[in-house]
Image 1 (tube, rainbow, N blue to C red):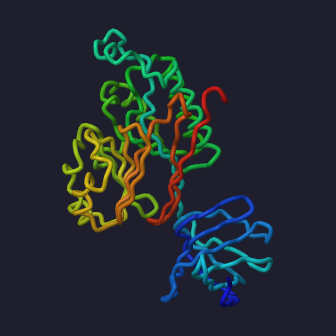
Image 2 (image 1 turned 180 degrees about the horizontal axis):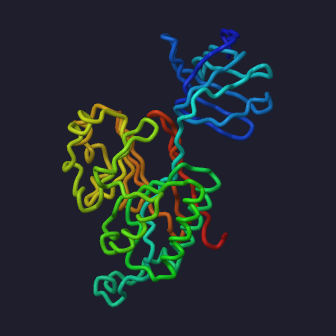
Image 3 (image 1 turned 45 degrees about the vertical axis):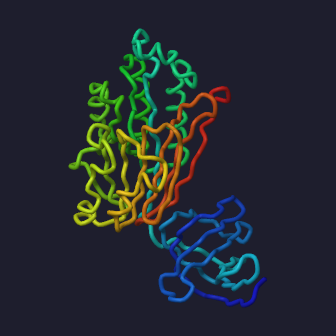
Amino acid sequence: MPEHEEWINNETVVLTEIRDDKPRKASLTVRRPDVLNEPTVHATLYDRDGITTDWVVGEKYEFQNIELKSRTGDDPGLFFSGHKETSVNRLTYDAFDFLVVGDTHFGYQNRNRTNPQWRSRGGPDSRYRDGYEFDALESIVDLAERWGVDAILHTGDMFDHEVTSQQYSTIEHAFQNLGELDINIFFVAGNHDMNVRGEISSITTMPHVSRIDKKSNWGTICGFNVIGQAYNNFVSFTDFDWAEFESQYGGPNMLLAHPKENPPLSRYGFKPVLDEINEDWIMFLGHHHEEESFNWGRLQVIYTGFPAKLNDGGRVLRARGARGEYNVSSHKLRPLANR
């Protein structure tokens, strides 16, 4: 119940978490940079009060005529509450919005079916039908256009084996559509991509497609140092000198990788990293084919999964934020039968 209420004419906040973003209500967690006591505050604002804005984690907002409440009981703490006189003005515009995906395996059905290993495994994965990965590609492009993302981040195994000229044309056309929408594509090479070096080389001739598993292509995007590591140069997490990277580049940092050996899915498996880092890291990892997420202190690890699963439609991730603050959400692709 409210214990204290205070009207504030002007308050500058930084959005740190989107708790609920329904059309009728925005439930947020914000940081008050100029307040020493109780710097973190929850905020609830309703469309019915005329408060509509694009909420982006990491961005700065100005609240005018907002009510600050202090509550006790089951939900204690400070809360901002909007009303009809409240207005919201977004002050910064250095935000990013990424669609994150991995292991699309274009050309999966083109593997050599006479290969003994293939036969011993019972043939193609039952989660696939012929061309299903291209239906997943269509859904990914549709989502990227609908969300208006800045870029697609791909964690490797874009291709599986060689694709036919018609299949490559389908991929090329989809990527051209993304380029016309000013959507960049950043990717690292996975183990299967090593089998189709021609396709990889060809796709990177497109001006908006970049392979970032080379140090010369590392860069900074909206406050994150974004680096990539390919399958053949990232055998295990102990191969990378995390402390040396931080000493040169600082943080926060974002890693795209297709590691040859995924560590155990536990804190212990990532202990070498945890022992060396002092900056915030978010890691998007491919190769595992199962969507998993772990968060330990300054380290967040997200396995991007396998978007072309037949049974559940597969998933993609959306990462939104600015200047080191971010929010990652998972989105299910429509199953093939519903397309």
